[in-house]
Length: 231
Image (cartoon, rainbow, N blue to C red; front, side, top):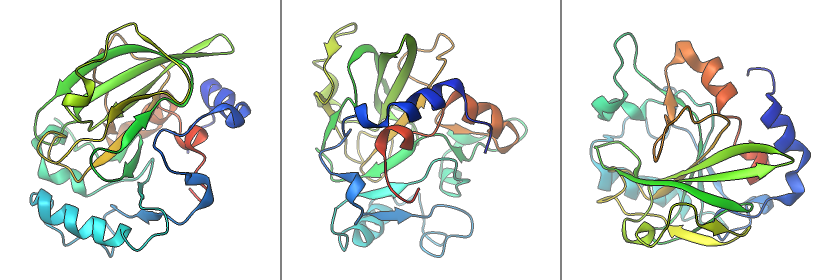
């Protein structure tokens, strides 16, 4: 893991200020941490091109939990990106996950963890992409940063206005379904970004292994906001 960035230190210092991004208490445990790595005993034989079958298997694991949430880890080298050419690179395939995934039922509310301004909204509709995506802009102790919310419901983001202000804990979107979220089991991809680099409505959520340190420095651990124990 790269050295803690300035933004990561700031987020760590304000852990008690953040509100949930979905309507579940992730601090109490009871959820399922899912393994999408090459060595996973759970999903390595799954055909991820079969989005419906993949989703059914994944949620069968989650249903047994006290809290119906599955967790997909940050900084995980994942095999599941093999199903889409979106992750092909000229030299190597992108496979390092830069956010945390929260696998929940479609239609689950998505909230902002702290006061925000709606920076941008886009429908990244290519197979394997984010689908409907929202980027929020925040300021904390004079530091500006962004949070990204991917795989949302298409209708749930139509009302959003660029520049609109949100209060901490305010609901602004819903988790989308397989048909609209890029072809994935329903989940929220939550990512923290320190520098957008001029991007709008989109930002890489997966990095090449050789560039891991650079991208993790730009995108610190979202668990500094989510506060999920054991990650």
